[in-house]
Every structure is written in structure tokens, then in C-alpha cells.
Length: 170
Image (cartoon, rainbow, N blue to C red; front, side, top):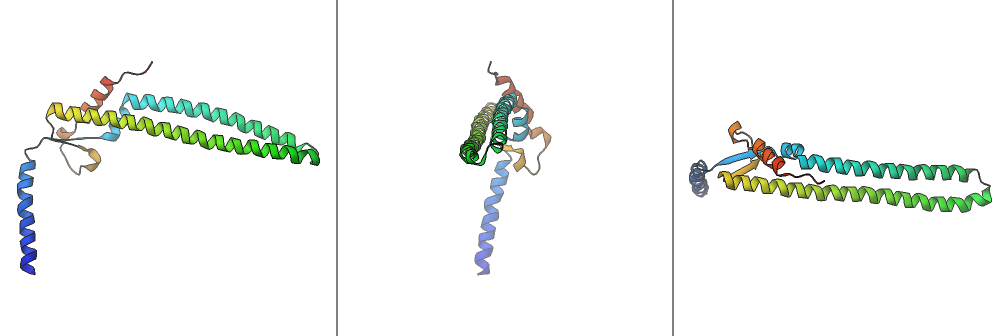
């Protein structure tokens, strides 16, 4: 049993040594993807656009909420016989408002996700093109790197390419 384990361990070590020697011939870099996304002009423009939409929707919903509050105050002044009928209408409006608010949140979230997919695709393509053009075998995300020298960091190059290729919509 011990001989079998020893054989497997030695075989594993033997297989790892040539692989690590071979890896030294590879050109490897890393990129801080978070920094690229944060400093990418397209990301910043998307964020401004989405924040503008969010602000407009919040203002629209706030106005509807105020209308409901005013309607409730008017219903409270009615006689009991009229109050029940108007309260039913008010509850329907409140339900419609809640549905509108949740639909709005979902729509904005979906749009944000779609924009993020576009950004990820852009950055992914830029990194792949950069790697091919500059002879890199591997470019890692900085979060996966435990140690590397600064000369392996290609974040600045990737960000410059991304921003130079981006043409803002008019």
C-alpha cells in the first residue's frame, strides 16, 4: 500500500516539474479588471445614463405617491357611506402604484445587467486582442494573482485601449 502511494506521489511530482519549467517560457500578464471597468469612459457614461433614468423614475413615482397621499386625505374627510366606496378605489390605485414601482425597479435592474454584459464583452475582446497582438499566452485577472512583478501588470494598457476605442453616443 505504501509503495503504491509513493509511486503515485513521485509520478505526480515528475509530471509537475516539466510543466513548471515549460510555464517559464510563457508570456504572462495580469489586469485589474475592476479598475478597467471603473475607469472605462463607457462604464461612466452608462452609469450617468442609468442614474438619470433612475432619478426621473423616482421623481415620477414620488409624484404618484403624493397623489395617493392627497387622495387618502380627501377620502378621510368623506362620510362613512362614501368613504368605503372611495377607499376601494384608493386601494386599487395603491396596488397599481406598488406594481409600477416594482416593475420600474426590475426594468432598471435588467437594463443595468444588459449594459454590464456589453461592457464585459468589450473588455474581454480588448484583452484578447491585446494578448494576441503582444504575444501573451495568459492574461489573468489581478484578483487571481497572489504575487507578480509590476511589469506584468497590463491594466494601464488595456484601459488606454478601451478609452481610445470608445466613441460616446451623441
